[in-house]
Amino acid sequence: MKDCNFAHTPYEKMFDRADVYGVAFDEERQKKRPVRLCIIGTGGVAVSKHIPAIARLRSIWEPVELSAICNRSERFGKNAASVCGAHWYSDVSEMLAHEQLDGAIITSPDSLHAAHAVQCLENGLHVLVEKPLANSLAEGLSICETARRTGRICMTVSNKRFSPPYYRAKKLIEDGRIKDPSMFVTKFNLGYNYVNILEGGTVHVLDLMRYFMGDVRSLSAAGVKKYDFNKTGYPFDSAVALAEFESGAVGTVYTSSTALSLKPWEVVEIYGEKSWLKVDDQYSLTLYDDETGPEKTWKPIVPNTLFFDEEFGGFMGLIENFCNAIRGLEAPLVTGHDGYKALELVYAFHLAVADGEKISLPLEIEYADRRINQILRK
Ligand SMILES: NC(=O)c1ccc[n+]([C@@H]2O[C@H](COP(=O)([O-])OP(=O)(O)OC[C@H]3O[C@@H](n4cnc5c(N)ncnc54)[C@H](O)[C@@H]3O)[C@@H](O)[C@H]2O)c1
Image (cartoon, rainbow, N blue to C red):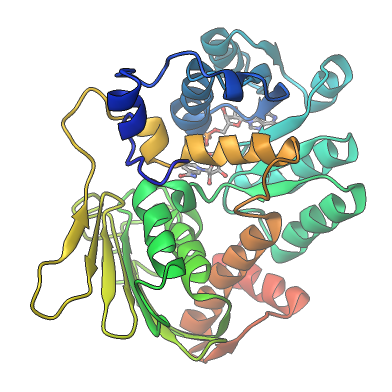
């Protein structure tokens, strides 16, 4: 992802190369080794995010082929396969026996991530696994250990790391524009009553928190169940967590499934020495680094027909990074271990709310999985 790119045609392509949509022949990109992928479990996120991101990458000459779709549902499998000209299979083993694949994007339900990821890794594929990485810490660890043993790449879908405002925020920190971050504040709303908020949504900002601030040493939290909108019997509607990082920095996470969902969805603030930044709703990035001068804001130019949702959501950057990691051209920006640590933060959050204690990390796997099963009545 180019630094100047804020999810529409990069300046250099649009003006210097007179390539208004950024689709002119790109020889350098096109001569990279082709990568053949499959997607396992083509439901909502695969069809609306991963498949369009791959199509957009192909349209800008990235040699990535979506060869196969696996969905046990014939209706959804065939529909997804028809969209991208791939073969449909109802069973993973059958697909692996018939297709020559480099990697698998695993977008099946959470409870199947581990089985699908391990099967693909054991068959020599690299994997990109949707969040949350797994349905338990033990399963998450088994994915990471299988990847290590087989020497295959395991990435987790942390698409927000690749979304332009967060990507640029990370650059600002690396470039010293936010010096020595000491505090992280985030808010995440998700008002769908069929989704478990921490696993389904807050996990994204918990991953960002670790991405920007490093590992968490301890977490305290409190939650409230006032309205009981959630249909799955979730333990709370709204909750607040206080994190202490290994670096000595502190952070807070506010999350709610009962206020509005979309206005705004999420906010991230990072405070340093004499400067701070804010990413508002995964849309605008503002740097405040001058007591009396103006703030600096980056925003996409919308409404604008040159704006690419596939890119803004981070899915294009994520899949491009997965392909380049398979080719040995780049290191993964997010690993299976990162997915494991994000899941561990979700579980620490639950434990802190349920038991009213400050939770130290890393978690003891067997105890945490057992206690989480009781709390969530899995
Ligand atoms: N990164 C994000 O922003 C984001 C957004 C939404 C969902 N997700 C994650 O993506 C995953 C899928 O979510 P979704 O909303 O697309 O769910 P979904 O229910 O819409 O899709 C899952 C698909 O998997 C298929 N499936 C079930 N069992 C299968 C099997 N044994 N083999 C093959 N296919 C099988 C189902 O038929 C269904 O089509 C979940 O882990 C979810 O947490 C991530």
